[in-house]
Length: 384
Image 1: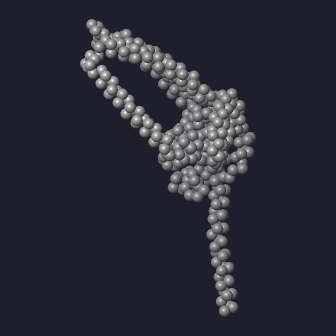
Image 2: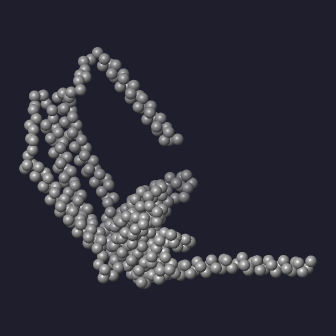
Image 3: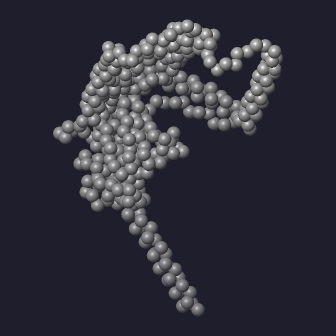
């Protein structure tokens, strides 16, 4: 209803403005006017000053944006390679900021200085090899260096030597949630196929594969601090993207293929919660939630719970209606805490055996009942 009223008001305001413009045109009926479509000196002066005004708007809005939203950037990286990714990002942003500031200033200044004026003739250069070499050579050199640095950083992050000891974990994406599978004691994931998805086997693990028997499937991802983790990433349905912002990690989840990404967590969840930037963000969020809770209480609804920081695995592709809610909690802890958490989790083989046992017991119950019924009916017949 509110949206309808807003639309009606906007329509009425538009009609009112249109009528005022018509009235203004009528009042100027006797005045001299220049209806020529050719710009004169006055028009060019106005456009020149407007270019300067727009330049000022760009710079003011940029400074305001840095002041207003600068604190929202991610803080301390929680992975070993995160600092290098941040450095690459910072270099790129500084270059973009410098080039944007310099080129926009020249563009708007020249638009004002060389605006059209009566009697002024433009000087035209068919070509200028020195200028072309300058404005082509500088970007080429800068971009070449930036691309080389980016490739070096990417290869350093993505290259995992075969002899390096890593923990293999699978991330499985589906609308709209995540599951994770640890590779067990053999550190080898069992084979899988979506055709095998049935019952508790939500990841389509091949039950006949010996390597799959010690795999562990969980809905909350725990990682040991200081241990390199190699993620094998799959998707059940559509294109997703495994995004772990605090670890500076992201990789597409493509149906029908396995992608991978590796990193080493270096800050536990408990340690990150003590980070000054995170503490400030949490306090800000809880202040907002407190104000929202007062409104909810006034309506007789339940108040919001205080927010606590956690690492999250998110989907960074618009994969459907509940894309915004596709996330999984990540807990980084010490090696001992991780082992204690993992040892209580049943393996895929144990879970499958428990399911088969339960199904067998369920099938046997009707058979026993039928025997009892048969005996009862025989007793009744004998009495007759």
